[in-house]
Length: 359
Image (cartoon, rainbow, N blue to C red; front, top):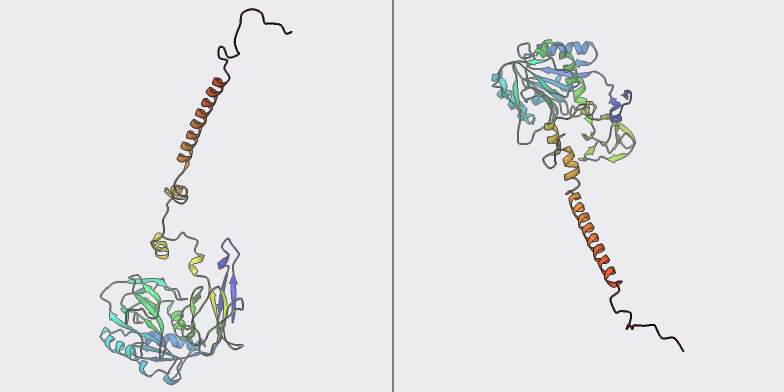
């Protein structure tokens, strides 16, 4: 099922439509392993009664909900793994060993800080603003390059929910135990929507992200082309990277058969009509630009942008031309006066008396 929601148009038309695509599928088979998963077990039971999930054996599970890394070594190939840390911090070495064997490039470390903390940055479709975390572990990526996608970040800047893909299948790591002593999540309203997203929606969204313009679309196996909203096809063989160039519904095709459809939307930040912070602007543009504030804008535009001011040189040139013109005019008048004057005796010899008469 796919479509879009449309709002009344405004001056910024790019976000007037928000596209969606939802796959209709039978309840997801979930296997819950490990001790201390009482709240998770109750949530799965509620989802099962609502037809959103069903408890299955490990071999038939599409999603393994693992507390403390239990069952990671024997999960079916291609199934998703949701890892919840144990309440006992002494069990972290065993959990990290299971993550290493499953080739999940993250590890848990004890968090030395204490005190209540909240979720600062949340990319999930579940509101976590009211969730408070008292006890958490630090999620640390193995290696220099960060692996996976950080879906939720704490006020301290530490990742709290991480998703990614490993050779054995996609994975999700939660940074806190799910019990009332560790976090208010276990006894708050977002608990059920979050568990539903983790076991029935996230595993079927590739890496758990909602796609925005500019994202690289993950190509499912067997797909040979991607058709964008305008119908233009991009070849998508093994190892190909297809970037979403515009909003709309993008179709993954195998020949003429539709394999999957995903929605691509403009970034949510484009709908926030607030001036960008200077720190964020610096991060986007870097240092190779000149910043102009209100006091320097006029000087920057009319002086720096147009080059050196030349009005002084033009005024000086005009004055010099006026002086030259005045001098030339004065010299011409003196020359005319000298050439047209009558000098004494210039009209021939003079004789006294009357002129002689002709013949």
